[in-house]
Image 1 (tube, rainbow, N blue to C red):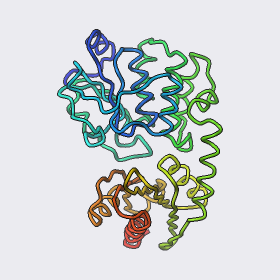
Image 2 (tube, rainbow, N blue to C red):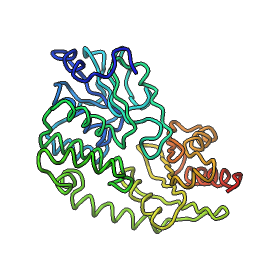
Image 3 (cartoon, rainbow, N blue to C red):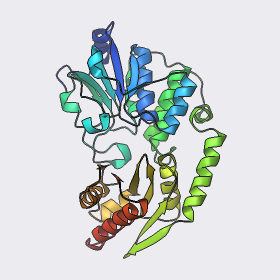
Image 4 (tube, rainbow, N blue to C red):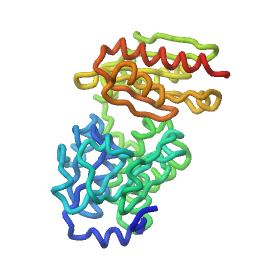
Length: 332
C-alpha cells in the first residue's frame, strides 16, 4: 500500500503537534474542501488550494465560517495531507517531499471510472478507496476510530458526497448508506446539507441556466447513438446542463462554457455506451487537445474535459466531431 501503511490511529499519533497543511486539487469543489476540513477538525492544520474554489465550495466554506488559503506553499509546513487529487498537475502547487493521501480516484470508483491515482505510490500514508467521494473515504476512518462527527463536519462530508454524485443522480446504495452514517450522529437531514450549498438563489440560477442552454442544443446522430451538445454560462452550471441533456435522451452529452480567459468543453456518457463501444471520452479529449494545442485535458472513459484558448463554438464542434468519428468507427 505505502511505505508506512494505512493505520489511521498511528497516523494521528505521528502527526500530532506538527504544522500541517491540508491541500486539495486546484479550483476545489465540495469534496476537496469537505474532506480537508473534516480531517483538519480531527487533526488541526490549515486548509488551502490553488486557484481558489468552485461556487458550491465557496458557499460551503462560508457556511463553515472558514477562509481557505490561496496557493499555499507546502514547503512552509512540516507535513502535507493531500485530499481528492489524483495527479500533481491537478494539485497546482509544488509536490511536497512527504505527504499523506486521501482519495477516491481509483478504477471502479468515481462514476465507474478508470482513474489511476498517480500520487498514491509516492505517499508515505495512504487511504485510497473506490468510493463516490473522498469525503466518504475520510468519513469511514473517522467513524471507524470513534472520532465524533459534529454538525459542521457532517455537513462538510455530506456536501462532498452529494455534489460528487451530481446531486445524488449518480449515487448508488453504498452512497446512501455512507451518507446516512454521516448525517445520523448529529441528527441532520439531507435538507440541512442542501441549505448550506444549494440555496434558493442558486437553484433559481441553475434552472435559468439550464433553460437558456436548452435553446442552444444541437443533435448529432451516429447510427442509433445520439450526441447532444449545448452552451452554458459557467462551469457551475455545466453538470446541470449535462444532466438535462441526459434526461432528453442523450447517449453522449457535450457542454461548453467560458473558463477564466479560455473555453472549456466537457463530455459525459453512460456506462452502456462504453460497454457497447470502445468509446473513451478522456482519450478523445486528449486527441482534441493535441489538434487544437489546448492547455489542459483530463478524463476517463465516461468523462472528458478540454480547456483551450479557442472560441467555445470551435471547441464544442471539435469535441463533438471527434466523438462522432470515434462512434462511427465502432461496431455497435
